[in-house]
Image 1 (cartoon, rainbow, N blue to C red):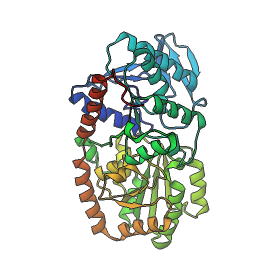
Image 2 (cartoon, rainbow, N blue to C red; image 1 turned 90 degrees about the horizontal axis):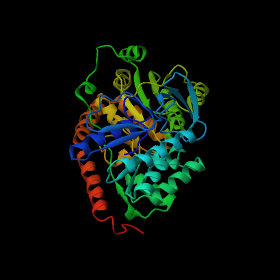
Image 3 (cartoon, one colour; image 1 turned 90 degrees about the vertical axis):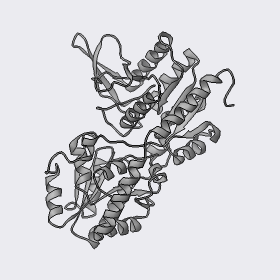
Image 4 (cartoon, helix red, strand yellow; image 1 turned 60 degrees about the vertical axis):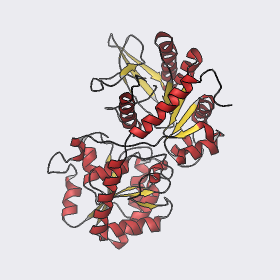
Length: 412
């Protein structure tokens, strides 16, 4: 399996998804060797082998993982060599090294299938497939179309996705919406794509507040003083629909002046959104936290301090943050343009562009504690009914099919 991140590294949701997915696959009997393009301490992972694809004389790498942006040549990695010297490597060269390592690895071990996550691993996956002849499964968590907010993005990334999708033996898409995007924008036949929904499972400590004091002291204090808190968490990019959210929140503040918006995360739009909030006269009502550790107590506190969580994404292949909000007893409002809206029923939903309806639903939750409680109770019950078992069983079924019938072309 080829991936770009695993906890404790966190640039998006894919690392957590890969971790939980592989843990469930291991329970079904799969023996997994997870290949990463960097080295770190993964001693907490005991259900699969972690293999860092780095040169033998490299001690550690700074600058990665980066598995979410549309950058290709702009991202740089700093290699710390065993002798203490440094070597700066651009993304293109870093990926080339990753591909060479994967191609060599498959000649040294015994593998049945190759499973690759998103475009950043496709070069390595195709190199491994070419050398070994093993069936290739590509797992699509996001496309360049999604990351560009429903438009054409980086043409080089789109080309890599196009090649990887067409040369794969089977495609796993994380939602029906993602499957439709792959069919529509890359010309892939529907019969080649299997929808494998994500899940989100929590450890007991992740469902409890670590202390009685929330990390966001100001927001918590204002909430106790009668303010309502709306929370948004994720990358600040055009994909996430945050400009529409700020315009909707202007309407909320007009109706309910004692309202605060907590914007958690960093990204390309960070400064642009701060300026927009100022232009809309919201400087006193919007708090930008910057980047937080996506697996720590401060991250969980951000959800817990809210009266309502909102994910207004323009194009969201899945979206696990509503699960994280519900885990902290906070109801969720999500865009209809998200994959998670296919499986979560006990959340409020709105089109990302409908700022009037978005504002109305935010105010409705602020004004109706009973509604918020009902959404929370039913949403948590629904969340806990989701698990990785069904998805893991489905993936294993396709693994076995392609291994058993490898002599016959599965798709034309």
